Image 1 (cartoon, rainbow, N blue to C red):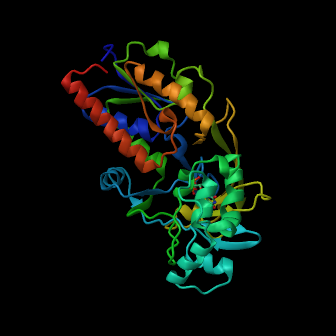
Image 2 (cartoon, rainbow, N blue to C red):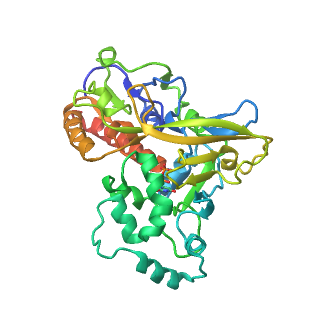
Image 3 (spheres, rainbow, N blue to C red):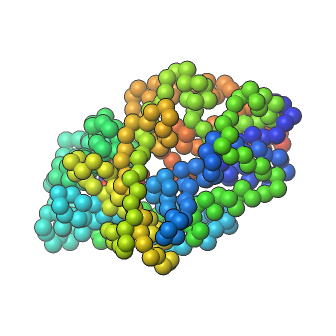
Length: 377
Ligand code: UDP
């Protein structure tokens, strides 16, 4: 441990808020800085002034987890309303159900297959010469075959990641299941829901502790916090080191916001699988709060592109080039005394919210136990 000052946390998103609260509860004074003018990072939600619709300002966030402790944790700060994500996708002027399930398969191939028949049928489509899929494309060709891959994954993925699925890791597609029944719940997790008053309200409550002081619109400058007893940094890992090994690649998103007088698409998320449609998906935010009455509607057309220096980073790309750079930054981060790098940006990983909270709880607990042992951090 260095310095005698406060603990400084960079970023008032999920990681920063959860770590801050754990440390505050243990009696520490915590200063949290965020460069933006709001808390909650990319989970930020706010009500549309005209319609009252709760908008997921940085795109759709659906809470899902198998981690009972994390579920209890979030429920301690917010009532979670029942919500199941049932995504649809448009491909070549037809609408299908996602994730790929028995309905999708039967609609797409014009069949009436039962589960076993569908399994055998898809196995016939699959490229069985691929024993150990490494890339996104290999994973798709091995498990759903060419036709479904080209209709639902190829174009969407090219738009989302700005490269060929042959250059992306299989892990990205492994996020999505293939089901041989009519379960169209996008997630398989035991606990799923939507915070009644939005994520910003939930994170505001996590931050609401007398030992926590939040300063917004304030960039972290290392020199200003040289006396901090410890820094938990959830900003961009490469940014902390002034991009000395180059910029880690991110995708950013642009949202084209529009209002609609009624129900625009009848579901929260409609994906667009065709490469000829420039956006990846349309989100109609009111469907994230099915328990509320809404007069109008607010929608986002979502466009993905390479993240420039002044853009908000969303998805870490983690291709070969980034992996080498990342290794350099990780080595530097491990040597940096008095700083712990956390969260999606601080560790450059594609993290779901529940994993972010789990890791934040573990990080805070480890810090407190090391502190109790008098360890050097
Ligand atoms: N994906 C796709 N077609 C779809 C939905 C997803 O090809 O209709 C691919 C795409 O590469 C995406 C990945 O699967 O990045 C993971 O999808 P997920 O829905 O988990 O993405 P997120 O909601 O996190 O952007």
